[in-house]
Image 1 (spheres, rainbow, N blue to C red):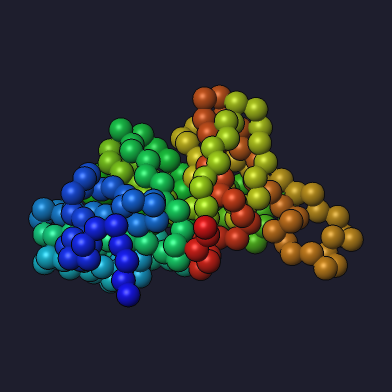
Image 2: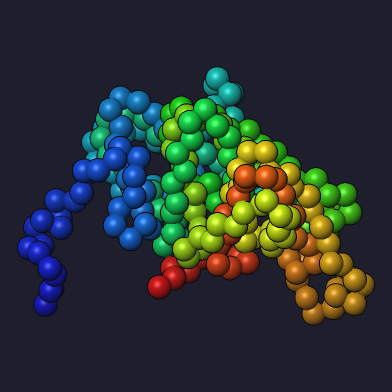
Length: 229
């Protein structure tokens, strides 16, 4: 027997209201309404749609927007275009939306879910010499412009000020503000090679007056994470 707080037919109707680039109740699903425009989302993250919407999985080399977004795991962005409503999610991860006003934000490439049409992106790396080699290479996506940016996060995010330097595990940091300086630091000792993963050997230091870094509650990437309660 199905028991719900309102008639099942009302649930089946779906919820297309609210902001055109917004979250459904529970913050685990992004809802995007398109009126002939386009946006960009992580390839494979669409879970439902209604209307006339096209998902372009291959479109490299067109205007710079559709070039392959290479991250630490080689993720691609897909172009989403048309008229209707589409929903995006990934493994039950928490989703946060940042609204940029001619500003910049850096996102861990594996945590980037979707961009509104007014947002541009490019791939950057974190410096750190030997520490960066220990970390295995740290690829990020810098987004800029005006519009919304949806970011995946394992559980509810923690936001830390960077007025004083703060070190974060490379897989726990999901986004940070423009102007924040980053470098890979290492607590590497030869004895640590035995019985420990490389994720414990290197962290990223964030520092910058007036900035912040968003941290997820775990050291595993949002991609493939199990839904949390």
